[in-house]
Amino acid sequence: PFDVLVIGGGPAGASAAIYAARKGIRTGIVAERFGGQVMDTLGIENLIGTKYTEGPKLAASLEEHVKEYDIDIMNLQRAKRLEKKDMIEVELENGAVLKSKTVILSTGARWRNVGVPGEAEFKNKGVAYCPHCDGPLFEGKHVAVIGGGNSGIEAAIDLAGIVKHVTVLEFMPELKADKVLQERLYSLPNVTVIKNAQTKEITGTDKVNGITYIDRETGEEHHIELQGVFVQIGLVPNTEWLEGTVERTRFGEIIVDKHGATSLPGVFAAGDCTDSAYKQIIISMGSGATAALGAFDYLIRN
Ligand code: FAD
Picture (tube, rainbow, N blue to C red):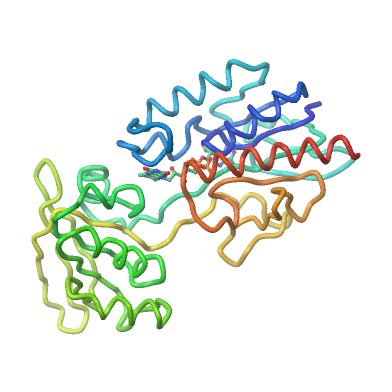
C-alpha cells in the first residue's frame, strides 16, 4: 500500500507528490492527464520567479520534477470511487483498486463552456477564461464578458481597468452578481451591459474579431466587433465521483481546513477542486505542499 496516494496530476498534485516523496514515504500519483489545465494554457506570466513560460512546457517540467523522486506515476488513469475501510481504497476506471494510508485529492476543475461556434476554435486566440491570467493580453482592446454572475462581473471590473471597453453579455433579464459589484460596475465609464443576450457565435479569422448574440426579447440578431471574449459562466470542480464521501460546498468544491484536511480523516485535498479562495497555478502548488505536509503530520500521529 501507499503512504500517500495523490489523485490528479496538475500543479497541485505534482507539488503534493514531490513534498510527500521528499519525506521518504511511499508515494503514488494517479492522473487522467498529467499537467491538467496547464496543458490547455498558452502563455503563463504569473508563476512568480518565471517571467514567461507556456503550458505544455510547464507541464513537462512538472513531470520531470516528479520523476526526480521515487514516485509511482499512473498516468492516463481515472479514479472513479473512494472508500475508507481499514485503509483508503481508490478504484480506477480500469478496475484496479489502490490502497493507501492517506489520499490527496487534486482533481482540479474545468471552465464551463458556452458551447457556441467559435469558442473552441478561438481558444487562446481571443477566447479566454481567466482574467487574472489573460487580461493584460487585451490591453487597449475591446472585449466581451459572457456571464453576469459574481465571477463575470468581477472579471468585467478587473478588465475595465486594463482594456479599452468591456461589454457584458447576460443571458437572463437581470445580473445575478452581488449588488456592490453591480454598483461598482455601473460606475465605470467603459462598460456596457447587455441583458437578455443569448450568445450565438464567436466570430473571427485567425483570431477573434467579434461576437454575435440574439436579443431574447426581440429575437433580433446583433454583432459586436471586438478582440476578446472572456467566458465566465462557472468553474466546475472535478469532484462528482466523490459524492457521499468527503464534504463539499453546494458548488461541489471539497471543503478543506488550513492543513488541507477534508471531512474524512486521512483524506486531504488541494488546488482547484477545493474551496480555496482563488484558482491559480501558484495557489494550487502552495496548497499541494500544504496537503502533503498535512498528510505527513497525520501519518506520524496515526
Ligand atoms: P488541474 O490543473 O485541473 O489538474 C487536475 C488533474 O486531475 C489533471 O491531471 C486531471 O487529469 C486530473 N483528474 C481529474 N479528475 C480525475 C480523476 N477522476 N481521476 C484521476 N485524475 C483526475 N493559472 C495561472 O496561475 N496562470 C495562468 O496564466 C493560467 N492560465 C490558464 C489558462 C487556461 C486556459 C485555464 C483553463 C486555466 C488557467 N489557469 C492559470 C488556472 C490554472 O491552470 C489552474 O488554477 C491550475 O491548473 C489548477 O491546478 P490543479 O492541480 O488544482 O488542477
